[in-house]
Every structure is written in structure tokens, then in C-alpha cells.
Length: 400
Ligand SMILES: *Cc1c(COP(=O)(O)O)cnc(C)c1O
Image 1: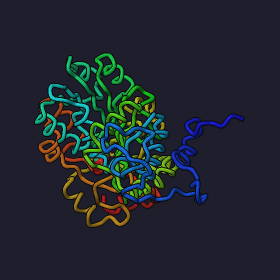
Image 2: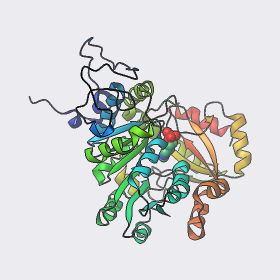
Image 3: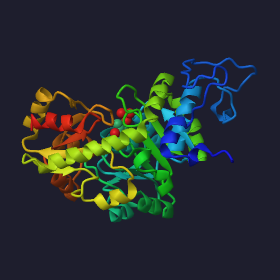
Image 4: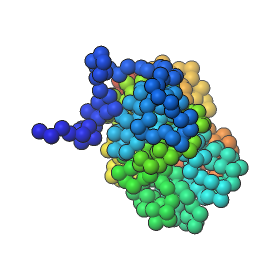
């Protein structure tokens, strides 16, 4: 039998074996952590980034490192893409893509509600560097089409989006991007490659915060950009080696270990989130539940088409949000009242509408009305963890 490429195996096999093989010298089955910042070479090497390619030996960890490379190969294989660049955090990945791909005079179309760090970068730092930015609700294809200009160089979509769990049709937006010769970048942190593979749907770049589901255990920051070989090599040499946002090999190793169980964890996150969504939906003090896997979600059908797994992220609105937040902080015993998401531990946090609108999203007119209609005065963002669903629900129930 011909040997199969790892990519043609099942997703659980790819998650476990992608990028890894037994150590050639010792036979160690688990990957080694190579913490060395420098590497002994046996011939003189150029110091310029421009002379580094795939065949260059390891020289210095800011350029490349065997442990980081193993993680990159695993992530590229999970996304069915050619290459990956792993970085120190999700924001390092977002910043790197936006700052290296957009030049003064270029135009960016971006989701008008998304991860607040990315939202603020797009509204403050990019315009300060001469990039024009149009935030739109990218789940509304007509708005995306209307926002396109001759100088639109990139569309940036986050789906499902923070915190409204809006779903954007990646294949349809990829078509709009292609016909305008623009790049499509997708922040797929909430979906993970288990739910959605944006490259297969026509996206050019996928961005992940590895700190979330892919690492999965809340103990390592990391980020990644995944895409075609040419684009990733140019990102590597045009920006990242000089930006210096290198991920620690130790974090890369932890995240690789987390990624091995990603398919199993995502299945369990989804199963728990569905039960929690049902519970919240029936609760008299809960005014709204947003979970793409629940039939009540406005884009449930599109989510079903685009996502093979509905993930574990949901948002809900409760009466008296501030009082409820206090009660959660004081009363929860299993669920942690903390930011971040995608960990095995359940995490909940109130995202106040006024604060988000003023500091990050700066929505006006119908965009503001649409946000308030869903979020009211604030949404509890709930990252449903891997504890027993009955314990998560009874923890909420003794407070709500
Ligand atoms: C957390 C997050 C980021 C930023 O990632 P960090 O690892 O915290 O820098 C970007 N996008 C989304 C959707 C996130 O949830």
C-alpha cells in the first residue's frame, strides 16, 4: 500500500500526529522541547532575513525553531493549508497580518463587532498609518458588497464573532474578495479547524488565538497565521522576524500537546454548550441566548452548513446584568468569572454594552440599534467548559 500523507487521514489522527514524529536519535515518542535560542552552524550564514528559506538550517529561535516548527506544521495540516506561522499571541498574529498586508492608501473592510483588541487596532492604529477602514456587519453580504472600493485590499471577518456570535458566510465573502482582488482573512478562533476550515471555503489567511481552544488549557499564550506558502513566507520575512513576536518553544510545546485532543474536546464543548443553551433558554430571568447550535439562533442554518461543530461559545442576556454579574462573582463555585475562552474550565464574563460601544466598536445609527437589540445593556459571554454539564448548570442555577 502506498503511504498516505498525514493530511488524508482522519482529523483525530492529524491532530495527534501532524507535525510530529519519533525523535531520530533517541526514539522518543513525544516531541522534545528545544529551548535553545541559538544553534551551532557548520558554515557561514547570511544575517539577512532575505536569505532565509525553507532549506535554511536553524540559526536563531526568533527566525525558526524545531519545536515551534512542529506546531506550525500541525496547525497547517489541521487547516488543510500549505503553511503556518506561529506567534506569541493571537494579537501578534492579527497585528502582524494587518500591519504587513496594508499600506497607506489601502482600504480594509472589517467586521464591525469582533475581538476588542482587533477592533481598536482597526479603528485607531491603522487609520493613523494611512489605512482607510470600513467596519460593517459582515454577516450581511449586501453591506460587505457596498463597502468595497477600488483600493480595498483586504476583508477581515471574525466568525462566529465576539460577543454576538454572528455567523459570516465565508464562501460568499471570499467570492466578493476575489472579484475585487482583495485578500480575505478570517479570525477563526471561536470555530477552530474542527468546525470550519476557511481556506477550503476560499479564504486567503486564517488567524487563531492559540490561547483559546487550540491550546485549550488556559496555560499558554500563542497565535497563528495560516495560509498559502507564498503569503506565509512573505509574512515571515516582511514582518515577523523583525517584529520579534516569537512564541516561546515551551508554549509551542504546550499548545501542541493541547491540540492533540482538540477534536475530542470540541465535541465535548459542543455537547455541554447545547445543554447549557437549552437550560438558559428555558430560564425565566434569561432574556436572550445566542448560540449558533441552538435553533433559536438567527443564523442557525448557515452555521449548520459552515460549521461541523458549533463550538462551546454562547452569549446570554439576564435581567439586571450588573447585579447578576456580582452574584456570579460571589456565588459561582465551578465556573470561573474571568475573561478568555476555550479552556477546559468554564469561564463567564459580562461584556457591558456601553463600555464596548464606546471603547471598541463605536457603533452608530442602525449598527448601534442592531447591537443593542441583541445585547441590551450587556451580554454574558460564556465559554462552556468540559466539566459535567449537570455541574455547570447547577452552578449557574444556584445564582440565577
Ligand atoms: C483572544 C482572541 C484574540 C487575541 O488573542 P490573544 O492570544 O489573547 O492575543 C483574537 N481574536 C479572538 C477571536 C480572540 O478570542
